[in-house]
Length: 192
Image (tube, rainbow, N blue to C red; front, side, top):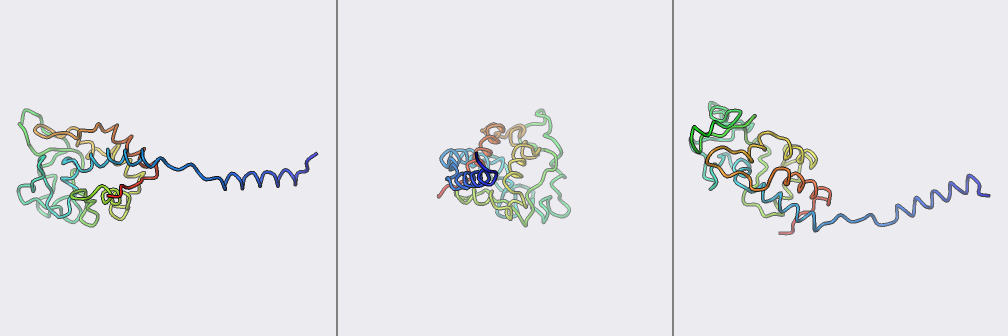
């Protein structure tokens, strides 16, 4: 008959053995493939036109400098006297207004100057490092970034950008699933 002390020792030994077994490795290959989907979206004009290295946002599919000398402003809401909301309302104007009218979505803005979250001219590895760094994402960790991608209405505008603009080519649900797959694989970054 086993004693309580013997059973406790056996349980501790089994627990130690389980902890010493190598944890299953994340599927890096599927994580990197999923990140390529994330990269394709983040570096599409709908996203990178606002995730800029300087203070002048870009516009149109060719990423030209925004007209009217528009500037980011310190909080990302535009320069003093010319806030983004002057032209960008809470939704797109009707298609009957014509192509390339100022688009709209709730809370139209750029990332603030202190955390511009730049997506332009980065290698896939650099973009990956940016997304993973809360110091560059306004304090967002990966779960918060996933929520931002999946639920933010301004981000959602990328799939309904108004007349004259190409929407993001990857469906939002597919982007969200890819982001989650990438996270679950340990958020591996490409080496290039």
